[in-house]
Image (cartoon, rainbow, N blue to C red):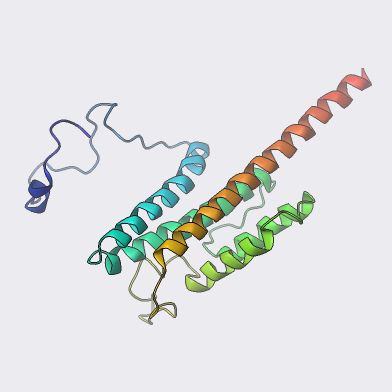
Length: 207
């Protein structure tokens, strides 16, 4: 944050003025970089949405007035983290067979499980629990719109709602999901490295 960043009370009375732009550069020590490279985006976006969800949950826990407002954004961030985590694994280890143009976690999980079975990782610790959690999130928000909009495109209220959310529990469970996805990524990457090393060794034997 730059030294001339307005104080909080200035933000509360701020009004749009001529010449305003949303995306301007100031100085690299203060700016947040936004990149175009898909590989770096796949690396940073899941972490970013998970972290944003954590921050919003912490804010909801600390401020009873904010609680019923920010919970939707927090849950959207958590859902987006799950979706991007699955898409990243599918994109990097699924031989280019990722489902196209879908936000449905159920379809992404099916493709992820195909990779798991293909790699012989079906006995991974926590896999069945994670499947249940992904299914739970899918049922709560099937098209990634349930925490972003008041109603569906036809004006129908969403089915998920009229219930309380234990903030401590959802944050803790989401941390477990993050740990799982990170470990799966490292496991798949290690398998790929080992396969490459074996291929190089066989090539050396042929000579």
